[in-house]
Length: 327
Image (cartoon, rainbow, N blue to C red):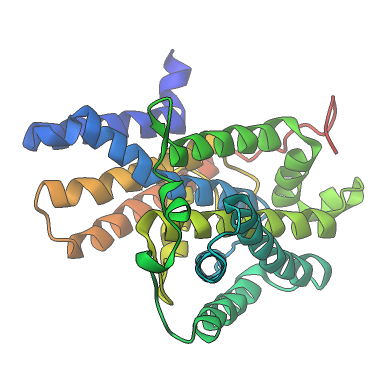
């Protein structure tokens, strides 16, 4: 029990519970079942993106183009649905996924095979992809009356009393947990982040792993692009503007080391949930929204200090490369 309480994820989970309880004392409406269900739904997209970003950060990389990829895939799916309203929803979703995957693979190719710095590559593609949103849409909005009813209804439709967004996020968490903990692909990512030269020496195909890591990041952003525009029933050029920094913040708060090689799925989920609680709690307790960025920044700096302190106390450990694995 003592060791469990010392775990970063356990401490963060307790902080979330304490924060919810404190806000509930000030505003009891915040802890009603309906409010908590909305909070969970609001956190889903951030959690899904944080899980994809976690895999990237573990390799000592970063994907700054994630929000721009989301915006481009979301705009394209909205335009596609508006232009062809009889198109099956699954085709639109697959199109958003394919667009995100393609954009992510561009990043992965430049980073993995040309060995370019991730921050430079994704900073450049962030601007390119955001510009493409404006070019393809002509700067126009796609509003709710232009989108088919089924396109808009899907994310918040309920299955067994739970929204589709929550079910999709739950499946994403399970998939990320399996990839990170029980697949050869995931263990290779941790090895690359811990010591790239050693990973190359033992035969890990670093370029190919990076290619598909950024591809997965793009595919997740593409899926979230559809879910974003469908949930909010609008697509415009500034969709999710700056949201990539919120995603990175969720990862840092969750204990994913920006130096690579260290991080967990639980940490990414809890980091996203923590930021969602802050975002939902401030309006309830009537705190100015301008304070949200300041509070988030303070939390990030605190998390970085804690990560740095923990890093000095104990070194990182490469996940085992032996045993049963999935290629």
